[in-house]
Length: 166
Image (cartoon, rainbow, N blue to C red; front, top):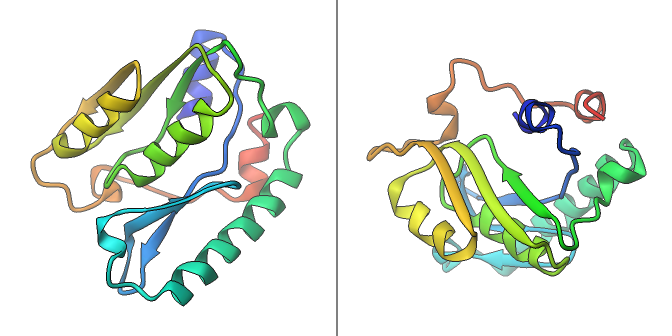
């Protein structure tokens, strides 16, 4: 999705590594999100054992390192200082990964952060609007069972597939 948008706008495509921490009994429910330098937990993390969270963070960051090595340098560490950044996600559910991505990008001093996603629940959009200059969401359903419910096909990209976009 980000590739097609970048191509249409003639903007460079870069990546940042943010991943949700799934609930131990429902991996699709984010209890927080991880970047290379931060961990943010949300209200669903309250009763979850810290050992579980620490192990997930370790696994996720190990995967980040492996994934970064598959991409060219300009894709893994885009310079966003004083740039307009269009942050694209295939969908926003709890907002944890998007909020972590915004906080991660803000440390790099972009001129402006704009969020684009095809689907997000209305209750999350207010949080995003407080954090970004602009939020573009195509569909705001009142019932939100999960992002994959809004796609006919929702395959996960392999590291090699992702590297092919750069």
